[in-house]
Image (cartoon, rainbow over all chains, first blue to last red; front, side, top):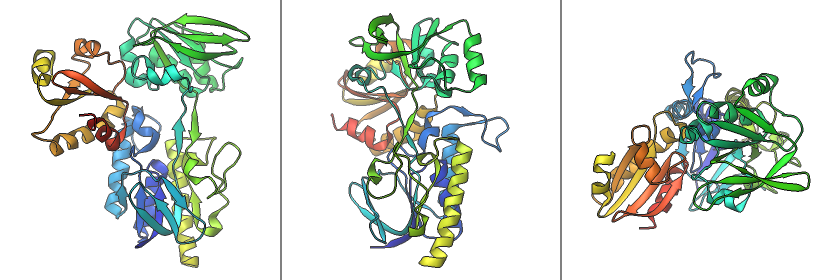
Amino acid sequence: METYDVIIIGSGPAGLTAGIYTARANLKTLCIAGNTWGGQLMLTSLVENYPGFPEGIQGPDLMMNMRKQAEKMGVEIIDQDVTKVDFSKPPYKSYTSDKTYQSYSVVVATGAEFKWLGLPNEQKLIGRGVSACATCDAAFFKDKKVVVVGGGDAAMEEALYLTKFASEVTIVHRRDSFRASKTMQDRVFANSKIKVIWNSEVTDVLGENKVEGVTVKIQDSRSNIQCDGVFVAIGHTPATKIFAGQIDLDVRGYAKKEQESRGIFIAGDVHDHIYRQAITAAGYGCEAALDAERWLGENK
Amino acid sequence: MTKADFDQKIKTGVALVDFWATWCGPCRAAGPIIEELSKEYAGKILVGKVDVDHEQELAAKYGVMSIPTIILFKDGVEIGRQVGFSGKAGYLELLKKV
């Protein structure tokens, strides 16, 4: 079996930036990109805060550019999911459904996964009123009532975007204040189409073939809100399931960075729960690549 | 595909239809994969696209409320759908329903 210098698991800004750097440094690099490659930016529209694009750039276009750049540098990319890893001793093994790959070092850049509420009827009605992407789906809710679940920046953005189409937007949040930035909160509070239900939880999504409402639990009482759409924005969870027992994780499942001494480098949202930006992920990818390059120089 | 030719096109055989719009990020991610499939399955299945901005009636008729939605038809009858960008493997999985 051929041994790569670096295997990068993940293909968001962190993974692809790492690849651009390692391949450019002449390290034999494989990026196992995942079946849905490109990460969270593939599910966004206009990105206005990634430097170098004064008019903004579509998230998927940004990722396609990064991928092209990585391929041009010589990164080998496969669009499959890693199903299992064995990092017990070098060379480190990464398994896909039909193949095994091995490498002297690894960059873990699997990012974070979208979090659903986890209600049975929610899953059944995805695409029939339940959505995770207001910029994709808001237009289907013209003059309709929608509910947004969450209290972070993402929830504020979804709610504000929905006001362009929906007649009424209700944010259901389980605490008594938002975690979102003040700027976003101010915009939400200033918008007359948005109302907020505090200290409450969505416990069921109603409807058979399409969303007809949600059940909301406030303290011990439950009530139904009639609506046509439910937009979920309760955040992300680090994609580290396949690494359990193989790398150090913190209590919330985020990968810890302190494993560089054995040639395992961590980059992007899989570790970073504070900044979570495309540009910080790319920065972490660069950092991981430079660290890997130095480590390989000393240890390979 | 448009309202004018849709029914005729899906009436016989297998058709894979991508409901999308220009402004939808995930649709741009799905687009190239759908095109790949249309080449790989050329002559076997019909692969078509419906722009939901122009074809709101078709989107409503098939209950499309989220894009991308890929619907698989056999002889004019829906036999499966995949909502959201699900990668090539997701669409191949859908095609197994034929």
